[in-house]
Amino acid sequence: MSPSPKNPLAAVSSPDLNRERLATLKKLFPDLFSNEGRLNLDELKKVVDPALVTETERYDFRWYGKTRSKRNAFTPSRAALVHDSTRSVNPDKANGNLIIEGENLEVLKLLTSAYRERIKCIYIDPPYNTGNDFVYSDNFAEGQKPYWEQTGVTQNGVKVDTNTSSDGRFHSNWLSMMQSRLLVARYLLRPDGAIFVSIDDNELSNLRRIMDEVFGEENFLGCVIWQHSIQPKGYSGKFSVHHNFILCYQRSDVFELANLERTEEHNQNYSNPDNDPNGPWRTGDVRNALYRPNLIYDIDTPSGKKISPPQNGWRWSRETVAQKIASGEIVFSHDESRIIRKIYLKNVEGRTPETIWFGKTVGTTRDANEELKQLFDSVVPFDTPKPSKLIQHMLQLSTDTESDNVVLDFFGGSGTTAQAVMELNKADGGNRKFILVQLPELTDEKSAAHKAGFKKISDITIERVKRVIARIQDEASDKLPGDPQREFADSLGFKVYTLAKSHFPRVEFAPDPAKTEAENIALLEQYIREKENTFDIQFNKDTVLDEVLLKNGFMLDYTLTPCPEFTKNEVFRAKDAHKEALVCLDRQIAPETVDHFKGDKQSFFICLELALDTTKKWNLKHHLSDRLNAM
Image (cartoon, rainbow, N blue to C red; front, side, top):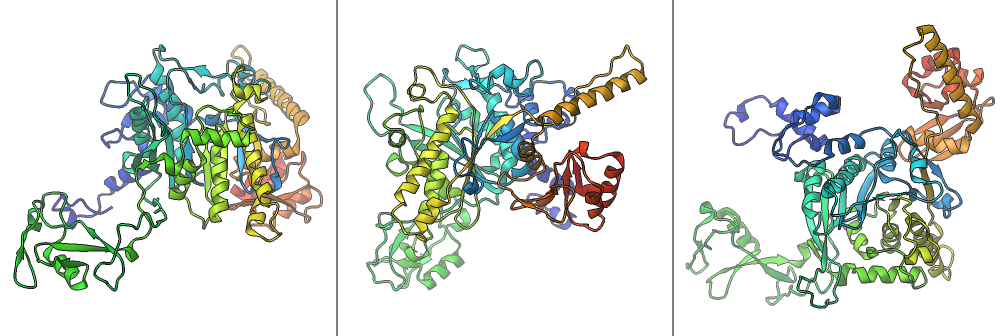
């Protein structure tokens, strides 16, 4: 960090390391700082131990439940994701495309193991807190009753809490829901990533303050106004609302907002009336927007006239103006009463994105409904969907076609984000991947969705993506093998995962204070045996494998290759784009397998704790050190 120019002694001083450390801390954890940019010691103490802090009144953005919400965000998850092959589509061609059915806070926590700083773009369209919609209940980890029994997720979907405006904690409930999820989502974004969040007037100001805290107000990119409706509405004595907002934040200043393509319409203001050899041009402003006394000076013309400066001064210094006149970028009017700045079309790279997105360009709610009608036989099974062109526009600004960009939407809804990703890839040849998370929320029995056979919102999410793939493949069916459109269509698929209990038993043993130490040790040993027996009975290699590898940092598009050099155990080499390891889920590790690692000084090895006795574990630890993970 460069020394502050306000301090005349800074240039002759050694670096202010404390200042640098604080800046680094703020960059990593902006939520630990106040709205005024100062380190909030209470928030720092809460990281160590929440009991250390006694809440006091101060200038800050506070609401009931904020501390608990933040604690929930950083509490580890003990759940698992289980592959649902029956609802997946072409899973062998999924290429990292995922739809996850489950409570999104818990899913986000599970994804941090493998997808931390791997997501290029996040788009979410959360509940707007209008007084009738819900907030997600963060009851996954509550101990009074298992989540699955409490919600009935395995049978009838999930219950959610209605957040009515008469609730005394109306805003607090919504704020807590959003804060915890955004805090975890920030860890998933790449340093060059960005997040877009749709919202309306009800919670715009509150959402802006939350996102300032979570992402840092210096990373605010803009507040986009989206024209979601074009058609006029009947007079009601109130404004006819035709817009929503989209808040945009970057993860860090490494992110670059892409320019948009130009069309002839955008170039209509460029011409070449003087046959300039540099081609078409338009005039540019030469005035300074702010008052700059040092830029107030006369300009001499070729014939000796003087041109007076604008009220605030010129845009450049005398020297810079002279250079621009010499290069021909600045010319004089015929009567030499003013200067003209030329902005050449050949020097313009694309089109700068704007903060007003018109419905005719990116689609409206009516267009979104029409998309669903085309896919679902004239039925609109989801309220207030977003048009796919709207999300494609975000992706054009935040992703590229050169690398594998992962796009995350953890309020998956009807699955518009997946459609936008696939159709944009089709159009520009990109290799973007989507991850959608949707709560298995029950549809209203009177709704069009329920009548069409969709009992849960997540069923709609999955079915829409399935139908989009089928349509793309049908459109390409008449293409010859080798045609890019045919190859793209043939490569489409996705995997479905559901949130489930961990396959590994949880240790919840508590010693009995009325018993002796020896008796408690005996009870603990009995407890462990019972837990291991339960695990052994329920154990299924294929089911457990996803949980083991995800929690060891493997993305869910990993590949498995058998290792024939191991003859006594079934060992696979797991590999994704970022890491690889040997994994064995046999119930017993053979001595020959242990001996293999005497000469293998590079591999990581993952196995089950119960598969090792004390000697084998000691030997493996001796051979592998930190490269052994026994679960």
